[in-house]
Image 1 (cartoon, each protein chain N blue to C red):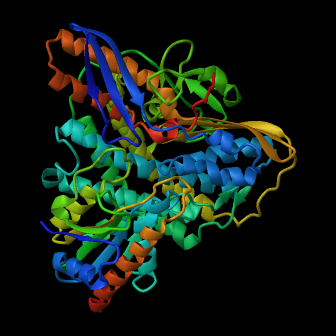
Image 2 (cartoon, rainbow over the protein chains, first blue to last red):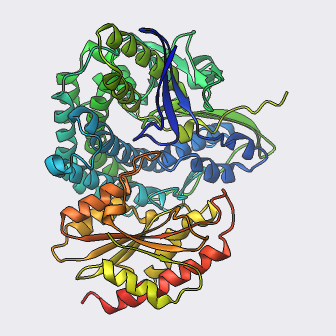
Image 3 (spheres, rainbow over the protein chains, first blue to last red):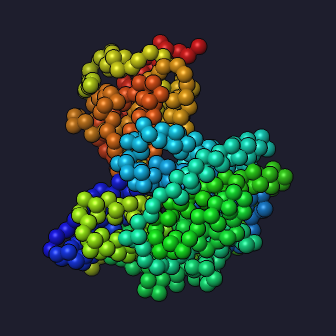
Length: 428
Length: 172
């Protein structure tokens, strides 16, 4: 028996590794191991007031902080029967567009691109692809600005709250965002062109399921009250436990999810597979041009999907800002009850994020948070195992195998810090 | 390669001199790194915030979106130096300070989803800027822990030393 290890797994958020167990040339097991310590956030917020919870739970992660904020707001607003005003909804949409560009620009250009170009890191590709590194920084700077204008700060903004916002962006800020978003579309399109130009190896290909929210009004979007399962099937987000049946495994501090005993994927590729035909504009054209059936089997296409989605997000901003600017600043909507339950489902950059709450007499009794990375972990392992088996059968050596497995894990853009907040502690 | 270890009790002038030796012509920018909720881990942010009062256009922390700041500095035509300030395991007593040059800012891309510091440093260097780091050895990185007195004193020393240098290179 032989064991190969990639520890630590680089260019992902958090502390993880890959272990491949071989019996001769036969692959016994491939695991994505999560070493990041448990965070126990759900226990921490029990007994808290909802308005305090929405400021605590985003601390799970500094990358998708606004997705956690938005999911918590959606879940708690359902629980407390709060119907936020239209301007608040539109401003939340804009902040999510900002977070999407912030995360996808970093992941495509700086974390995934070196894999495809054959460089050990973005630093190593600086001499040959210095302009692309600067494109990433430009996009990230702009996206940080969008998040700051909408949420109050670049990281962990406190401006969005239950029933509305503390302060809405000014018309000047909104028009500046619209202008700059238009200017930056070519930087996103360049990422699409790069990722569309690569040869994608067939080794990791396995059919899988894809889950995403079903955005309302038959549009592509980053929040919804129902969940689509690989086109067509639709389930109420309140039934999220049926979609994510969770379990623990010995090699990971993060829980795992499966759907009907099979792995599934969430993230940009899942969103585009389930809702991509709804995208209009340049991003819609790019999707139609580059989508193929191989996206349904090969997780490496997630990076191309992220680039197309980033283009979509930038193209959405002028319309979103125009709608926000046309509305007067409303007062926050107040809660109409103090006892109830609700589930918020939003699309974090890495996929569907659920926040479920049960509130009694104005205090949180139950909090349940299911992150996209926790949902993806089984799927990562399935594709890594298939890849390892095929590469070894093809006579490929360990020196080729391990980077290929790392590339698969990174393609999912895993956020291990997010995934480890939810381990159940059992004392026997 | 330059390295200076400044241990608690050493005169501030020695640190000022060591920093002056690694910086080039033009203005000095401070970029503070860290996580203030983890005890001493936030030292770099606290240094940047303290300097920001006197030098709002030249001192920034993680909370300001460093990638954009780095991009802006890299596109300035004039020479300059960027000092990253962070905690680091330098194998000395808590509160000890080390000044390191670009060569020693290693390519660490582990456990991060941010733009790596080494990449930001490389972008700056490519644009003709000098890059160095000031590291403070922490006593505690405990979540929700208090800032240790040793690191608190080191922060004061770094702020005082860097202030003198930034004051002498005011941008007109």
